[in-house]
Image 1 (spheres, helix red, strand yellow):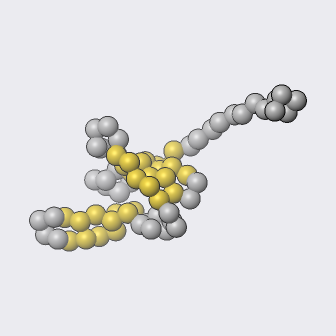
Image 2: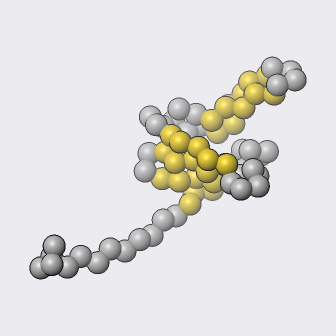
Length: 69
């Protein structure tokens, strides 16, 4: 999968961002100025005007109490 864009007036279609992913999901931000794409275990923020792609880093911590589990 890759992210493509189409100009509806000229009907020109071109690849905006090569994702080279097997699966992806896409969500616009609230103001529809950025696109967030989840693919291959990561998240990227994409500017649809320029095609600039920034990786969103995720850091989490999980505390497990094996005795109580």
